[in-house]
Length: 101
Image (cartoon, rainbow, N blue to C red; front, side, top):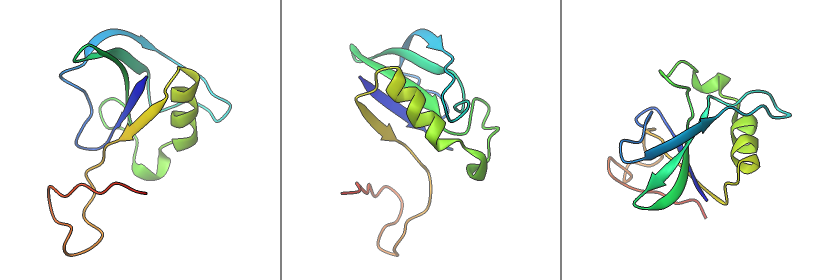
């Protein structure tokens, strides 16, 4: 199942047909919030806002290990993390997609 971790610019998925939410406790503590399950274009998916619902968790307090552990425990096979940070080079301006290899 695909898991999507939303960033500052993505706190909800408007095209996610929500079926349910699950609260998970992990060995690393609590993740940023309840994991939302549903379907996108007929495919199962889950969503977790990195900074919590309402964007209440600052970047230095995000429990990244708990977020990943929760998604793994709930069946995530692939994870896409969305963020709105600036480019790391001058030629990487807005609307440039970088995929780590």
